[in-house]
Image (cartoon, rainbow, N blue to C red; front, top):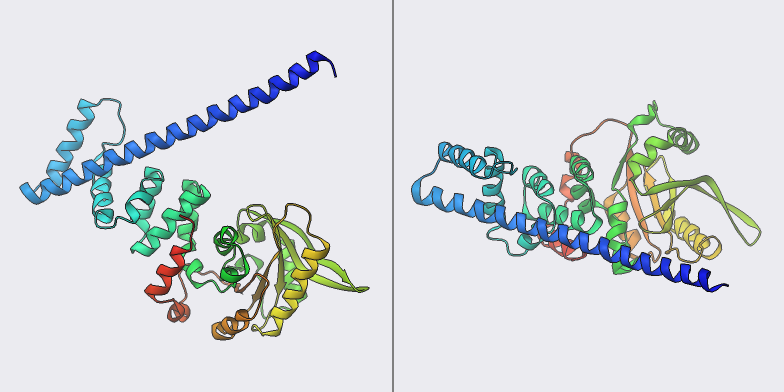
Amino acid sequence: MSNLEASDKDYEQTFQAIKNRVMEAQFQALKAVNRELLNLYWDLGKLIVENQARYGWGEGVVKRLSKDLKNEFEGERGFSVQNLWYMRKFYLTYKDNPKLQPLAGEISWSHNQLILDKCTNDQEREFYLKVSRNFGWSKRTLTNEINTQAYQRWILNQTNFEVALSAEQRAKAVLAVKDDYNFDFLAIEGTPSERELEDALVSNITKLLAEMGGYFTFAGRQVPVKVDDKEYLIDLLFFHRKLKCMVAVDLKTGEFKPEYAGKMQFYLTALDELARVEGENPSIGIIICKDKSRTIVEYTLKSVTQPIGVATYHTYDITQLPETISKYMPSQEEIVTRLTGLPE
């Protein structure tokens, strides 16, 4: 190699290091600006609350304050009447909760506005604050996750990830697996066979991937794994880009049975031994059934060592959490424990 080539290589490495450092500095600067903006909004919200209590300020005074701030700081955004009321709500929501105050300061104001609008209790707010920060959710993603009740789905999820995955993997994995999947795009009449269900899902693969989540990629159907000269077929196989692992899906058009978990454990062991490549994490399994007894699933997963989630599916439009499963919502103590398990 010539001296010039060596010099060019050294230069490229140095340039890349400088580029990375500049980008990191820009990111940290944006975070600092965001923190300062939220500190400002917190202080303004506090002043409005305190002066309402002291002087009986009403809507008229807040409107006047908005107008005067706009005139004084011409060109500055954020002093609309609506935004001032959001600042008041921001302060009132978190002033007595030192645990959530710093979390709210680590995401954007638009994210905070969504959470203030849509969430009804501190546990739900904590969930969306943490996952928005940890996974870098955009405003659009956060809106979609709230509208599709990600918090409720996370609370209801039945998996054994707490014991079968590392702390780093389990939080991401729990968010990646739903408790119930909406297959209303299939337009299937009656009760299909498992093969008919699989055919319909693969024929609508784009919609299926959207329902599974943004980080799933489709790897194949009836994927063979060969063990001791015998071939076994996995209904659907995906790869999850965030988890960096294969995800095997077993489809069942009836009610969940305990023996399904044993079959999935076999699939996952075979995938890890025969198909996993260097750098990939252990495979995860999802058993999707038409129905399930939550108690039977709970008992089954207690003795399972491979990471498995058990979910249901429906083929009708649903926009609200079914009343029939509301009784399965865990206690406040259990919710707090699960929230503690999310990365800080």
